[in-house]
Image 1 (cartoon, rainbow, N blue to C red):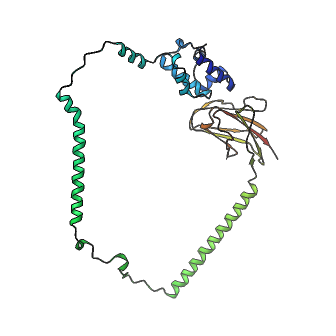
Image 2 (spheres, helix red, strand yellow):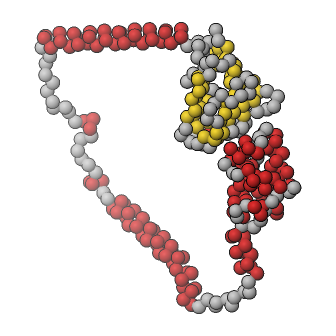
Image 3 (cartoon, helix red, strand yellow):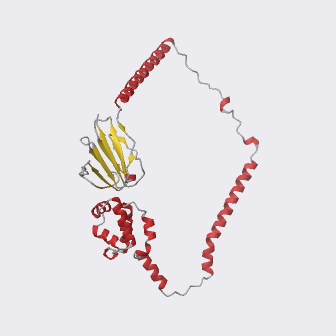
Length: 303
C-alpha cells in the first residue's frame, strides 16, 4: 500500500467513515476509493481524475488537499500537461531565429508609446497651470453670496380658524403616537413573558467532534438546517438510528426541516459545518467549536 493511500485511509477511519459512507459523501465510486488507498491508479479513467479524486477524498476526511498532493506528488502519475512539457524538453532544439532590426523596433515600440503618453500628460498639466495663473481677480463672481440674499416671498398670515385647525391636527397626531407606543409596550411585554426557550452552551466531548447542547423551556423541538455549499447531513436518535429519511450530501440553497418534538435526543451529523447553519425552533445555534466535520447533540428537556 502506498504512503498516500495509508495516510488517507487512516484519516477516514479516524472520522468513523466506511467506504460506503465516503462514496455517499464524495460521489466517487467505491472501487476508485479502494484504488486510491491501495495506490492502484491504473483503474482510474485518466491521470487527471487521480488528482481530482484524491483532492475530494482529502477534503471529505478533513485533510488539507493541496498539502497532501504536494507532499506525495512523487507517487502520483504525471498529468498530460507534464507529459507534453517533458516531450518538448527532450525533443531536439530548433535553430534560433536571429532578431532583425524590425523585431527590435517592435520590442521598443511599447516603451516609445509610454514615453509619448507621459509627455502629453505633462503638456496638458502645464497648459492648465498657465490658464489658472493668467486668470485675474476680476473673473470672480460679483454676485451676492447665498447668505446675503433676501427672501422676497410673502408668507400668508394665519387666520383664527386656520390656527384652530392646526391645533386639532397636532392633538390628533399626538394621540395616535401615544396609542402606537402603548400597543408596542404591550407587545414587548408579551414577548418577554413568552420568550422562555433556552439553549445551553455546548460542551465538547472527548472525541473532539461532538458538542452537546440542552434545549429547555420549549414545547416543540424543530430542526432547520440551511445549506450554503456541499455538505453531508444526517440526524440520529439516542439509539443511533437514522431518523432523517433523506440522509445524503446536500447542495447550496437546500433546506433540511425535521420535527423532533417526539424525541428527547437528536444527533445532527454535519460533514462540513462551515456550509450549514442550524436553527432550533427558528433560533440560530452558535457552534461551540470550529471543527469542519462535527456532531451536534441536542438534549430536549420538556417542562
